[in-house]
Length: 182
Image (cartoon, rainbow, N blue to C red; front, side):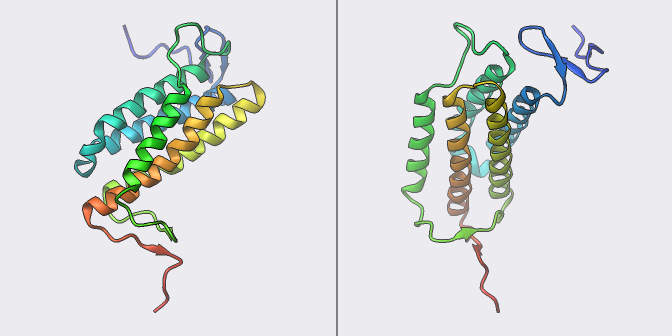
């Protein structure tokens, strides 16, 4: 089977049910941004400093595929279709709590960066926020899974915390904002 079909050359694509929509449709924007986020999470999982978190990151990639599938189906998740449930949201909260146990309390904003792995976490966090905005826009047009929306909200918090965890693990001091003027 060839990877190219030429069916999208006119600016349209097919949804899960076979219906055709423009490539800038709210549904395509939502699951396309989820796909972008998924690729970034894969890149994070490849950073040597983040190897202790790799299994959790692979689980997150699985959850993002589920959300993308949910958004791609105009009839909503079908019976037996993989979906994200409240347990996955709670799982993210547990992961955040576990990472925060060894972190100093957050009493300031931090500037993104400090090492390639920390920067990758922050880039993924910002794309996650965009994915959440796209999902909310889609939800305003057609009701979507509240668990999926909650998951994306929690995931951005988790990616922020992962960046802080990476900084501590790598011995990189977080750059506080506002910066002290010299």
